[in-house]
Length: 155
Image (cartoon, rainbow, N blue to C red; front, side, top):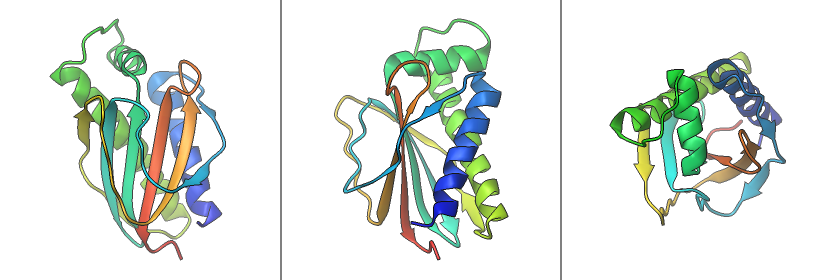
């Protein structure tokens, strides 16, 4: 996988989380994964297409989701209701938009799709392509994961 793609992802996540959540995420070692096994029960999926095609899959635990929503709302939020899930989708949308802009700076033109937020204890996701797994620490150790699936392109 092109290092420019990986760097676009890391830079975008850092800047988006810094701006929106006022946190400095700790990016752990990216790795190529054999499959997608979301570690947590809350998942946002955003597709992208253009010079490269694929998906961005954001996965986080319930406590992190509540912290994200609280930061985005500017007040404590203890419920993962429709408004909260919408906020989580919007965070994915902002991060994915930033990734798309960073990719464009590296000569990869992509468009993103609207977010889909999925909740459930045993979520299974299948995707074909190269899968990059990026674990992060946002509020606690290993509380957030991103999978970037690239089906085609990648120069």
